[in-house]
Length: 234
Image (cartoon, rainbow, N blue to C red; front, side):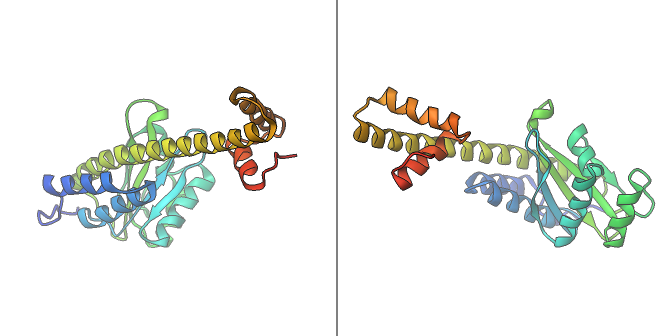
């Protein structure tokens, strides 16, 4: 079993620096890239990756440190089965000490072993209780069997908590930015209608809303088309 190396940067100071880096990251993509790079430094893994989850959709491969991780993820996402899917659904760590001997997902494990991956540790990214709190999964991989010990699992859980909060915050900020942008676009479109047709704000908004419903188009997109073409959609 792998021994914990005290020289690895897993001190409170290291995690504090990571927290600052995650807080300063401009978006979700930069946030998860910082997480997987930290994982390579702090844990006994050769590869790392993150699959993100949104309610009602399939897991999305968000960051990988090597193409082999994308293959490992694709095999599970396509079949909707495997340690990643289990970690996501059950909000629990999944440790595979050796893909050549593990019997829980034999078909998947055989394919992963052929890719040269022997040890797997999947840690869920969650922000609380309930399925709606699932953010994704942090996956750690090694070509050596029995690569991950208790220390690795403990450190991975701390990293996952940092990552969960950072990703949830980045997503919220992106959503808020999109909402502000949408309001600006709708306001511009309303101004065009008010000037062209001499209507008040309520009437201009009602026109946009009607076109949005009649054409099954998002209100934001109707507004953008009006701004770009000075014409309402057919």
